[in-house]
Image 1 (cartoon, rainbow, N blue to C red):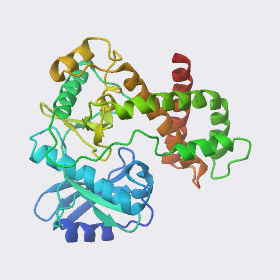
Image 2 (cartoon, rainbow, N blue to C red):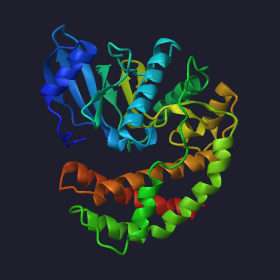
Image 3 (cartoon, helix red, strand yellow):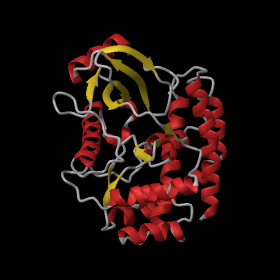
Length: 334
C-alpha cells in the first residue's frame, strides 16, 4: 500500500504498541509494500525490530459483516497461525506476537486493527511474478504439511461464497449510469461494460460449482493466498506470511494458484503422494474463478468510490485491466 491509512498517526500507533505489547518504539518507518494492509518497521528500546501491520477492517469483508465481527475474525485467523507455529510445530508459519491480553490483534480507532510480527530479514516474491520451479515444489511440500495438521483447536471456516458479490452485481447493473468517484471511475465503468458478458458467465459457473465444493468431505486448514508475494526466503528457509485469509476448506483453495499442471501432472502427483488426496479439477477451477471475481469486485469498488490520482488508485486501475482480461479468457476456457 503506497497511500497511508486515513486518520492514523505514528504517535497513536506507538501508544498502541506500548499498551498492547510493551513495545517502546525508538524509530518507526512506514513501509509501502504489499497489498491489503499498511505496514511499519519499528525498532524498540531493547534493540528488537518488528514488522507492524495496520489492517483496515472495512476491507476485510471475508471476515464478517461488521467491523466488530471482522476484528473477531482477524483475531481468530491470526491466533490460529500462532498455534500452528507454536503448538503444531510448523516452523514455516510467520505468526504474530501475541499481545499482553493474549490476542493476536488489537483494535486501533474504530476502523483499524494492529498486529505485530518479528521482523524477517529476507527476500519476498512478487504477487504476479510466478513461481520458479524449485520454489513451486517447496510450496507444494509446505502446503502438504499444513493440510495434514490435525487442528489443535477451533478452525474458522473459509466461506467459499463471494464476500463482495453484491458490489460486483450492483456495478454490473449500473453500467449505463456515469460513475463519478474519481479519475478512474469512468474508465472502470467502460472497461467493465466490455466484459459484462464473460463476468456473468463466470458467475453462473461459480454458482454451479459452489455446492459440490462446500459439501466436499475432505476439509483441511488452508492458508488461502499462498502466492509468491506471501513467501519470504531467508537463508535456506521459506516462510509463509499473511494468515488473515486462513480457514478450513478443501485443499484446492490453496493449490489452484500453485499447481502449473492444473492437477493432472507431476506436481499434483507429488501432493497426492504426500497427502493421499486426489485433486479435484472442478474445485481448482472454482477457486481460480472465485479469485478473479472477488478481485474484480474489490477493485471496481475502489475505483467507484471517492479517490484521487494516487499510486494505489493507479495500481487498482492496472489490476482491473488485467482481471478483465483474465475474466474473458476464463469464460472462454469453459
